[in-house]
Image 1 (cartoon, helix red, strand yellow):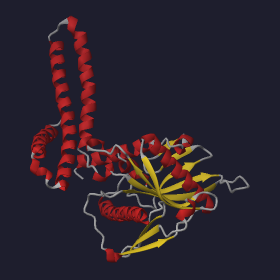
Image 2: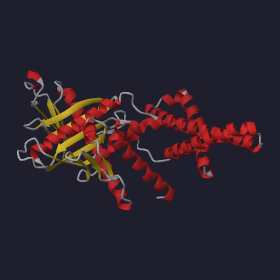
Image 3: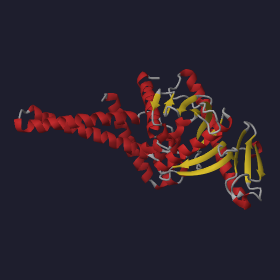
Image 4: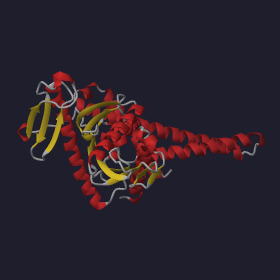
Length: 372
């Protein structure tokens, strides 16, 4: 390991001692916002320092084993060689893990996320594919142990979705280095255009059609963060909910639609019987969309300097093709092709998610090494 990296990790160890002392001070709990910030930093720093401690310990173990090997004791040589080999393997993996901790991390990665799916070109077949994508993400959420909640939906005539918004949350949360395992951290690269090639249920001649949907994954804003909207910039409409939901939900004006007038961004919710709860849910979606708008604008500026391998998440980007006749999934951003489409549509997204995150990490590491 380079001396410059060692110095970084040793400085982090000193910073951890400072954080421990500040958090032990009762005065630090006066400002809860600052306390949460310090706790988050302390949790992350302690994990990295522990990794570095294990690395230095294995270095010491290797040095001891090498001394035994150099002594020339034939009886101990075989054991020493095994220990040197084991230490080398551990040191390689630990150094890679330590390098990964230096990569920039998005604090939103630990956040719950709103997944918005909209039918695009292809008419009713596109709406049916939107329903398939929703099922895929819900099945993946089940595998991860996440909670899901449909926020709003607009169904098509054949049971598909013109538009559907679902909230996904990891009940166990995510802190420190595990923050990237949060919902947004795992699904953030799903944003973009999803194209499907298959024989639609409505096709009588057996011809393959191409349809498309757009997916947007939005990090849910931190409820504790100071996010305020000017009430004069909001138009709030109430109306009767449509679709399934029983008799009561359709007899009262419980559905809520909120429009942010400066941007024209709209969010609505009609999932709950309570107008108050629907308003709160719609406001959460609106804040997430506004935050996502700011993120896209910020990333667009960065992309002008250096194009991202994964892409900005622009909804117009065609990121993936689902070819049903060939059982093939292709992610065009990283040239990943898998012939397990049936399993993927059942929620087996792990390999795709891991490949996208690995590609992003590799790009970030290359940028750090080049000083970009």
